[in-house]
Length: 298
Image (cartoon, rainbow, N blue to C red; front, side, top):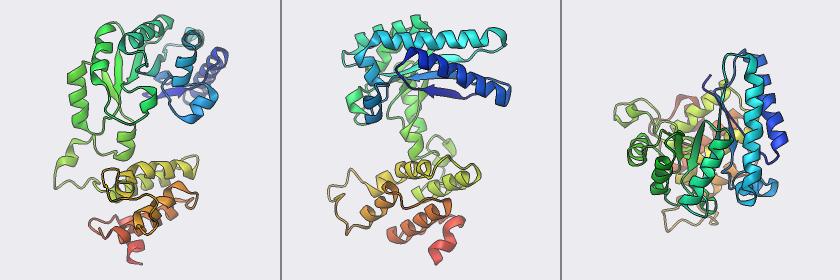
C-alpha cells in the first residue's frame, strides 16, 4: 500500500491508541498495513488552535509534541512485532517562528523520538497558505539532516515547480496540497500539449472530479463543495483583479461563489448543474463536458 494515514491530536496516550487502532482496522480489512502513519504538526487553522494540535501544539509545548511521536513510535513497534511489514512514522511541520536553527533542532528531536522521515511546509504558521515559501530555509533544513529524508511542501502548483524545488533544495521529495486540489492535471506532462484531450479548464477539471465522486462517493457533499472551491477559486475570487469586489452581488462571480460556500448543493447532479450555470454565465462554451452538455443546452 502507498497510503499514509495522518493523525492529529495532542495527547500521547490518545495518539498511541489511535495509531494502534488504524493499524488494526487496516490490517483486518485488507490483510496489509498502510505505508505510513503521520502526525500533523503544521495545521494553522482555527480548529487546531481550539483543540491545541498541529502547529499550535508545537508552539505551546515541544516536549509534549516529542512525547506524542514517542507514543506513536511505540504503538507501531508493538503492533508490528509479529508481522513482516512495518509502516513508516513521519511528522509534518512548518518553519518555526524562531527560524531555521530552531526548526532544525526540533527536527532532530523528532528524529530521536522515532520518525523515519520529515515533511516541512516552508512557511510559518501565521502565513498559512499565503506568500512565497522559504525554499532557502528548506535547503538548510535538508542539508542539516543528512540521515533523515526530508519532503518539502508549499506553493507547488505544477510539475515544473517540482523540478525547481528539488534542484534548489536537494530535498528527497515534495508534497503537494492546494496545487493538486486546484488542478489535478497540472502534474501531468501531457497537459502541455495543445492536442491533449486531458481536462484544462476549471469546468473540465470539476466535471472529471464529479465523475469520480459519482463512482467513489465521498463521506459528505462537503468534500465535493470544498474541492470545487479550490478548482474555481481563481476564476470566481480573482485576487489579482483590482476591479473585483467580493461583496458586489451584481457580479455573477460573487453569486456563483455563494453556491460553493453555502449548503445549497448536496448531490453530484446538483453540482453538475452548477457547472452548467457557470458555463452559461462565463460565456465560455468551448469543450463543454458531455456530462453537463444537456444541462447547458437546457
